[in-house]
Image 1: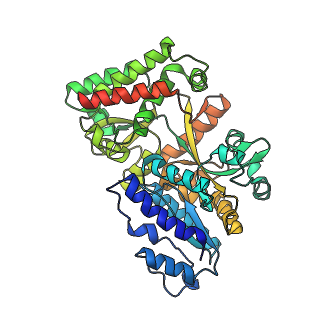
Image 2 (image 1 turned 30 degrees about the horizontal axis):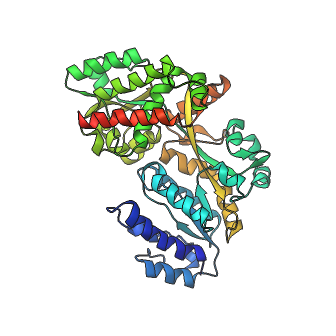
Image 3 (image 1 turned 120 degrees about the horizontal axis):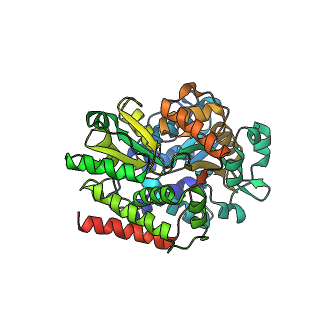
Length: 430
């Protein structure tokens, strides 16, 4: 029996108990052996741990692939399943274990992954691009795969650089998410004869007008800490601009700088316009306020696009619209999702086949329209994508040309702590 399955099953139980007392083991956690239907007499879901172990023993002569991620939520789970479907069609007979771990922005999954890496029980392939693991030899370089698949010419050089250490490339990018997006309810803006704000002055003017009419200006959720960071980093980016934001993230600008202080003051002011129940809402629940017309705006990454269009069945450009977050017009702040090959993976070739699908135009086109992101490949047809994604593709190219791409990077811990403090104060004094 594959050694990592027993470890994974037991680890899943441990994490479920320790990380969240209310987290339930759902059926899908053990139903993700997705064999080719012709290769197995039964394709019924696995309903319990013992059945998972028994089935693994029965199928141990087949190649097996464990895919580790945190894609369990709206849009992202559908995208992952679509990607796995493409993989199964191309490589039948490989049993896929979808080892996704719940938790917004991957907080729980990253803890589990780090522990498994340190204990020498890594998943075959995993979501992430930790270059420390590359330096420690925990993942394999993929230069030959890039050469075979022609990826050097289809992935942007900025992306390849992010995934490289020295001359070696260690991860394959699947998508690009824009993080500095203001989403808005088109009916609210039309009914109140308002223009979508692009500057902070315009934002606060519109917010005051909405608030006077009893409309929540800004949908916000801070049930999980990363959602505070999602807002305050965009405010800081809009205040400082691309170059100074990069300098701040590198420690080249002091946190006492007047412009940095101005950014934090703007963040605190924004919090005075949010919904009263912000502390109980995750990002989907906050975005849903905009979709339902209960709030006018939401500042969040473009995974909101996947949530709106796939899960809520909204028509982009009709029921909701978008703009760059205040002060960031022309800047593209982004993060990307990538997968690597763990050194010591039992079915190494199965992982490489997975990465081939992940980096292919077909794989990226299956995943990204559902996730709300744009493909990392720059040669895909735009026919599969909605109007938001087409505009995002164009914005990425323009920002790259104008050197206003900003990769996801953490700002100084002291600023992050201050942002959390202000969000906490809001919770105490709504």
